[in-house]
Image 1: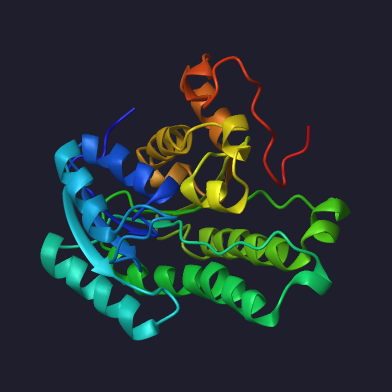
Image 2: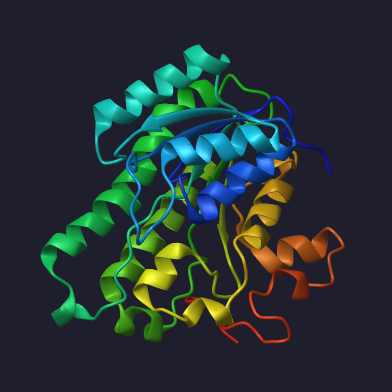
Length: 273
């Protein structure tokens, strides 16, 4: 497996959680990371800003460009992409990680929250891809990786939280469409989803204590690295699951990722069994 040395990654929502962990994993290889996220001031409930993430990335061995970006804002995204190209000479990889969440039924989902999920999850994914693609098309081994689930059409996933499910599946459908659209051009477009619950600060805020039944974000970051170092022309249009990706690379001990040693992690949303 290769590494990401010298590659430039544009990562939405990289100030904390899975996005930051993917950034740190790439930084260990010596990658350049564009941190496109909103948080510029510390939040006691959700620690981490674009600046603290940049410091961690540089300490890990990478170069960082922290940019305050609301991915719902077309001009802001386009300006961030332009600044990234000036700073690092191009963009090799886009990681669409930023996402809004509301695990609620139809009657309990305010329209403001519905709009937020559609704007960030769906529109943001499309906008970031559209803005980065002119530069990805010039890159060697270009990848787009979307943090969204496989298209599991079991009715239960729609019944329990229809708005969230539609927003996440829309991300996956965009990835599927772009994979075919840019297959001949050599741009890989894939999705990645965790098999189990991932313990992030956002999960802790939503449900204190639930993270103890999950795995650390490092497993998703290791899987992302394994995908992003593959040949783009032969790795596209896939719905990847983190554990399966790592098993393919020879990993057999997943206990190292457990938040609570010896505790079987909870299976994540959209994953059967």
